Image (cartoon, rainbow over all chains, first blue to last red):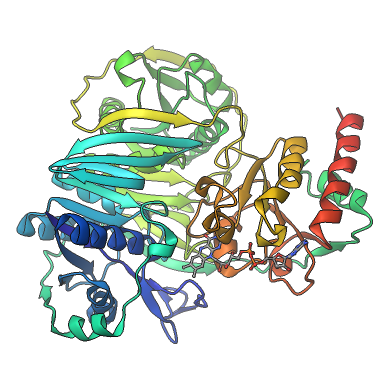
Length: 248
Length: 320
Ligand SMILES: Cc1cc2nc3c(=O)[nH]c(=O)nc-3n(C[C@H](O)[C@H](O)[C@H](O)COP(=O)(O)OP(=O)(O)OC[C@H]3O[C@@H](n4cnc5c(N)ncnc54)[C@H](O)[C@@H]3O)c2cc1C
């Protein structure tokens, strides 16, 4: 089985979010970048298939040279090789078109992605990629088993879950549940050494036209101070919620 | 030209988010100087949408669409969009809405903006405000394609009544085949889900163990709220994964979010910050949640919450 894992290179969750150039660009100064947490679930599940059922695992990122350390980290975790599509990822649709080229050229059976990236929170690339390729697609995936060329997949729905079956090829957008949190991999020294020798191929983009562009950013408005209510006076909280906040 | 809203039904019925998307769609249609059409599938009460401004409702009645299939539904939306020459297509942020929208966008070669929190600030160029960086900021996105797909973030626009005398039309799209087969759907019944709840009561590691969750459930019951938890709580198996809220869990955009024994780590706040009013109950006055909350009580959950439940019961009895 040939597996492709889509890796988004995102600011670490604790990063301070600031903007530059008249609030038109994200300020990467001092920001540490990591593998998108949702993609880590996908990568870990891919490693499981590799170890238990036999598979080769390729990781892919659409991005500039700055995302290579993130791809190396995925290699250190155990992916066999990496591909970087050499263009800035500015719009989900354009990213999906670039990824579709990679899939067409690589002939993958299974494509695993994260449900969303924690920077732009688009929740769109995997579904778009699947639609461009006309592959089956399952969003918000919390379980995935493969038997031969048949997949059994669970997805989270509002207030429950749905179990689906599909033939391969298949694209899924994973989240917590796809693997247990405790099973997430971190690179060890041996992995890091080996990752240096693994192939990281840079491919040129097809330069698809984006469908959207970000014109400016805004920070959340400053919040007024928290009103502290005395622990012995819960009636006051109820009254505030009723009369002031009008939520009960 | 028109604005098309997709209003999903659950056993024939609408949810609040469908009315919110319709209210929003009506306003976008006004901004564009065009009309609104709402597409719904197997609705038993389609005319309810008139109240929120739906001038025309297309109801698809087809037993083969009883089970949701994203690709098939997306194709139905595409056919409706083509029939109505829709320029803007709006979906809500239900699990199914989020699944469908990117598919619809590709099917119609449209730009898609998800997590939208406000009306377009301009319709030419079409510019729209979205949540970004896990709720730590917003971005203003221009959609440059002729057709635009908008994913409206939950509870971001609200319900706006705008009664019209609408028209109802039956719509019979052709159905494409799908090889992605639904085997079973498990739904927790009788409980308010986090996605639909106006109020969410959430517990963290401060509750010390699953045996103490009675106070969370009782508080939720008095308020008609859904229950939730922080990540370590679900990692420890005290509560099901489906209750984990935050950046890597479920997002919460409720009217009222009550956090009990939750420190308010940045990853937790990222997922719950879009809630309108936040209340924190925590023994530690230095807990970061106090910076993010609107109201707070510094105190022991095991003393404060039972008192709160009792007083809320009195309040509810007096305000019934
Ligand atoms: C990549 C990444 C993603 C993450 N995603 C999420 C996420 O989606 N959601 C999430 O929740 N976390 C997430 N986390 C974890 C997050 O950083 C925190 O560890 C977590 O939110 C802490 O949970 P907690 O507040 O319940 O527990 P703790 O940090 O242990 O805090 C417990 C709180 O309870 C208070 N307390 C103790 N006893 C009492 C009492 N008797 N009465 C009242 N208060 C009491 C304490 O003062 C303390 O503030 C993520 C972390 C990472 C690295």
